[in-house]
View 1 (spheres, rainbow, N blue to C red):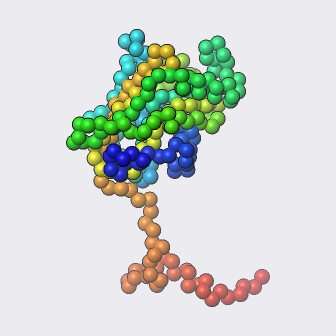
View 2 (cartoon, rainbow, N blue to C red):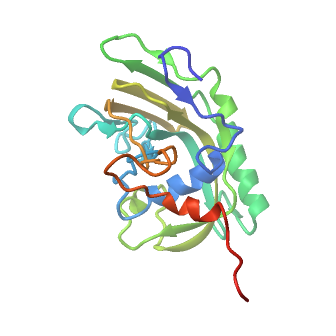
View 3 (cartoon, rainbow, N blue to C red):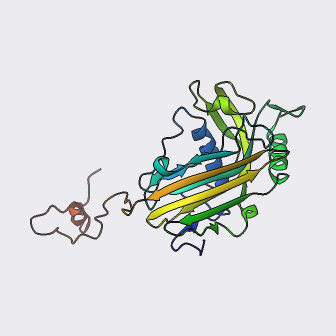
Length: 258
């Protein structure tokens, strides 16, 4: 939990959050990112919104692959108070039979070894956050190294009309793959209403560098899933239907004939 901005919470990287571990969420995020509709987020009640990071494979010495990406101001992400936000800082993914630096990934262990090596051998990483009207920003978590996660082996689906499959350093053909991803990820939940700005930086092996800026607008109306009427008075209120009146039939059950 962050103590800088009141109410804001960070999901424990060692725990299950809304049914999935961080590693499992990373697989969901990757499938969403390379789907045909990556910009449509599930921001309803108890939803999860996914940030996408810089997809251009930015290199400090290559002006054709810009270091910065931004989703700000009019393009800001708009969410509910109980919408969680999944933030990729930096990640590496490999699929079965993918060739990397002369090595062909033939099994899950080899993919994990290389994905882990490519992540932990990178350079500086960081996330800072600020909330209007303050111009002061704060580090989001104490140590991002605590948020390293690996996915289980999962099915990675790239449709023909994937929005971003050609953006990758090694573009992938449409198809179904077995994949592992590793990286630094953070999930924010329990927002308070207002306008936030996130600055995210990741440095990979070699000269890879990515910086992303996001504006997030949180509305004041928290979502509820369903109307829980379990505490209604037996018999219902005057003039209203008691939707739980079947309970009375169980007080004195009659024997049934077999």
